[in-house]
Length: 382
Figure (cartoon, rainbow, N blue to C red):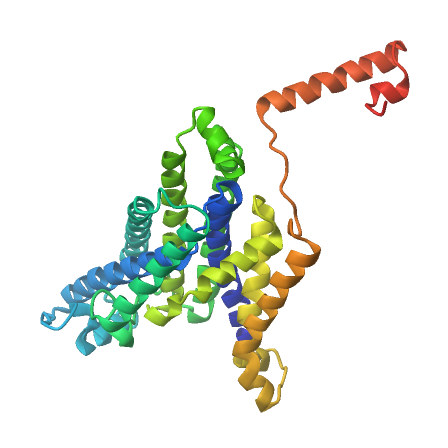
């Protein structure tokens, strides 16, 4: 039973992470028409920031509590040393950190990740402000791969190819270890719900309508007085901050940061989620995120064995590649049969539109009651 709960918790965490990523990409591309194919770039920056800050600060707090000194390293960050790993990995069992300190580490890391994501989104937007469409997508995609290769081959910020490990989870203080993953999964789900409400508010605000105007026709948007360059900068800043927070949430679940976690295919998984659910529809983004998370979690040998499903060795060896085959088929099927996605874009319901519809309905009902108009006319059928 614990194994099944672990798989369910894993799916919830991945769903929450993909939901935040999909909502951010949907805001950028679905509403704003900005093809941010460097989504993994900002996700990785958030992960590196959160992991490095939590490891560095947690190491100093734990070492101070234990009364030991951690020698500085000349080859890389102090948290990359074996001594630092031992202190961090034993911090929970030896009660070196309090519950408040674990939660403080988590909060500080998330705030720092969001700020770094927003700033990096602004910086990335400047060289791409005059680019559009394919050129913008390729530029952002290349930036993500450059950062990944630097992180993989350098000790800074994530301990090179070895990765940064022993990052403390915010619930490491909880005595019942079997429930820690489930508690964290619920926390990630709460963040996903918050960002859903947040993106819905943005999409239905005047700023969201400006994004749609930019998406539909940049020249017409400029004629109406919208600053397209500023809108693109703003949406990249907001979307990048969300992606960075998603990366930070993933780090605190896995307890490590590995550069190869942030390969370009992570971006395309987010694209699949948005295409499947429907661009410019946040409910659709959540639906697509749930499907992509299920494919990644359940098409796994250990997950299938936990669920009591045995597969031949040949199938088990093909499972990592089968995931991408399925996602490719999803893209083809969506483009051929449902290009608008499973849940199409909804028309904007501004206060003016809602008041107008309400008045027309009242006038139609009044006309029907007084008999001054035929029933079909009052119902809007004539």
